[in-house]
Length: 357
Image (cartoon, rainbow, N blue to C red):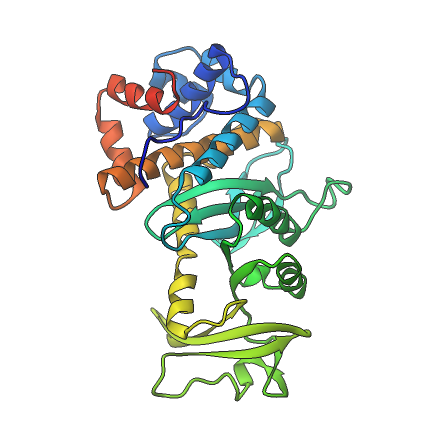
């Protein structure tokens, strides 16, 4: 990454100074304050009154447009022609366990809690090359019971994101876990000529060398003792795919065979390395939840919740850009350094980022 960093308000939307200040104050508060990221706490950390911070939510539609356009600028800013870049798409739960009146909150399974809990479910896309990761957009899942006219499956939401991203970064590869590797998704990728690599459930039936069998029982996919991985060409529901099998050491269960499905005929080593880049999105979720208050917004309106999520992602982008330029190991390292500075120093850096300085 080289050249000047994109500025938060360098967009086609005309943003008055009051709105600039409101957005910068809220995102800056997320970065500055280590506790719960609600308006009252951010106001105390910023030495302003509650109403000044709440201005961010006065017109959340404009806020989300501004923040989304900034993230779009980041994509244009990244050197996509240099090195290998990937789009990771995954779903995450934003806990709202005690919520009774927040729109779009529903009961869903949370892998973090290994249980069904109440919360917001969002499908997120990040762009990464393994060294820098930027969350670029998301869509909120709405339950069919609460929103029968607006409901879409998580796979359909992912497909909407993919179409938009393909326009900005044509030819980029999409990485997803096994929850997205359905027949419909694979046909969608084939129809839109999209590159992909996804986890593949071992109980799915495929045809390899004319034989139909479950992936885990198929002789055509088995790995010999001398090899770590294997790539074979096959058919899944009539769709031509490449299947990857490789051994992975598990902490508790020893060695486990992992299966991938991909559009690319590459070596096992390259596809294994490519899929490992998917871990970048899990790091985004961890940092956003543990340090940037992704779960902390108490607003009842769904559009205000989405404005908060965009603000968290912009704050994360700020940390990632600084991490890259300063050679830090992770965004948390930059965050701790920034919080250790005088408030004025952080404000100066952030206002430059927001093109307020």
